[in-house]
Image (cartoon, rainbow, N blue to C red):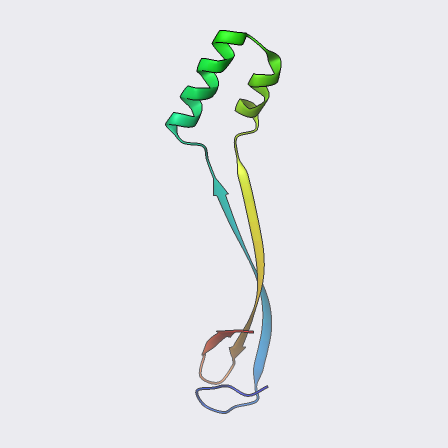
Length: 73
């Protein structure tokens, strides 16, 4: 593998994991609380306890050890 900037062959391949957590907004909370109060059901309270959505992706990054350029494979 060659560096696109300097042409060196001294490159390392590094896996990088990116994690994003998305929380429910105020309207989502208000809707679930309203439905829970009206029906008083345990089934409607479960989404309140599990309101996070976590998404992780792994990208492979190459780094040139001579010039420091990073690029994705």
